[in-house]
Image 1 (cartoon, helix red, strand yellow):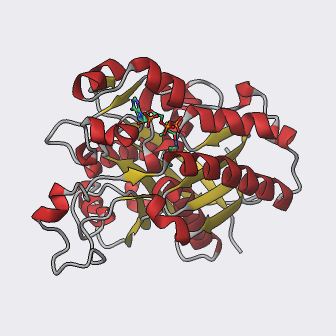
Image 2 (tube, rainbow, N blue to C red):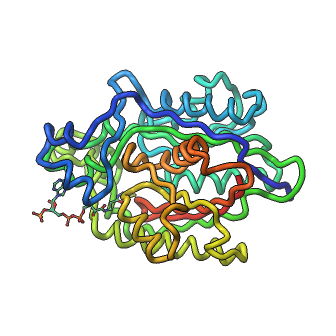
Length: 333
Ligand SMILES: CC(C)(COP(=O)(O)OP(=O)(O)OC[C@H]1O[C@@H](n2cnc3c(N)ncnc32)[C@H](O)[C@@H]1OP(=O)(O)O)[C@@H](O)C(=O)NCCC(=O)NCCS
């Protein structure tokens, strides 16, 4: 079996900053409510011309540069997103030519906020079994074009932002695997607790989307916030403990915790429950909101810039999201 390692990361967020005060001009909300409930102070939104693959391209270019590879070495492209450029084909197919690549497999991952760790797990497995050697994995989202920006959608609209993060995962030349483990889970019975119903073939109509669906707002995400919150804390703690157990590690052995960024309170509650010192948990949600599949690789790039993620750092990541899906990974930088 071969070994895998992450050799570079990159990120990109759009320039336009949208503050909580900006949102309060569009819907009945306040800066204080958003900060108290979620920790979010601002997020980024794209302009009308920018798509998810545009953000992904910039994050990928930075990851390729930081990895110091020739992009022609990339033999597989994985793209985690729930906000693609078009209904089909998948976003990896649109990104591949923008990157100047041809023929390599271009695969979309649709596992929402857990999408990046699901993608890491797939990349790790592809490399360990010898199928591919140099995999570009990107998580990118443009949520701002899919939110209900009126008071009716305020519970969801204030939480999400746009952004992209990418990593290059490569077969290690020597030594042991630096991706120590990935654990993936799903419980589809809760799929409708956080979802967007339309467009879809499951709506009991003969079109995937029609005027009635749009008038009912079925194209917008809807969420049972309290249930998502409670499950996020429980499941992320569970799968993090499992990852530690699998690797015969203790919490104190982990240098940095890079969790999914859904709500600062979720991450604070996890830290409290697991007794993780606050300075070991790296959060970016204050600046970017929830960028779904992009939150963990954005966190990697920001942690590198902040000097918290260096060669040899032992990192634990966990994520929870729509599906319900959840996942964890332990890796050495
Ligand atoms: C969404 C969330 C912040 C709401 O916080 P909460 O403390 O549970 O708040 P509640 O849902 O109890 O709502 C309290 C009140 O605030 C109102 N409210 C909801 N969104 C609001 C907003 N943006 N601004 C002001 N008031 C708002 C509600 O309508 C409710 O009013 P009511 O009491 O008159 O009915 C919280 O549930 C959460 O973060 N859940 C997890 C979300 C998540 O992680 N999603 C992504 C998963 S990856």
